[in-house]
Image (cartoon, rainbow, N blue to C red):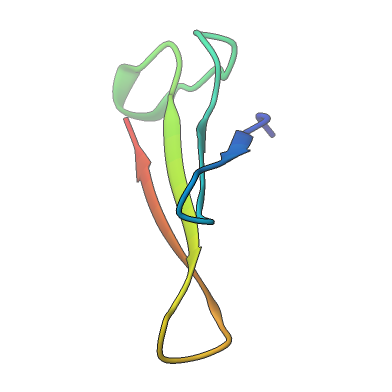
Length: 55
């Protein structure tokens, strides 16, 4: 797997991404993949939520 480095934001959420081109991939002819994620606590519950994008 590839490391996803997360940093705490002023609003209490965590945002991060993979770094550079080190996450090799062969999906759809790609040489590498990058991922971004945001993790936050829903104001209406005690559960954490994840928003993720892979390019």
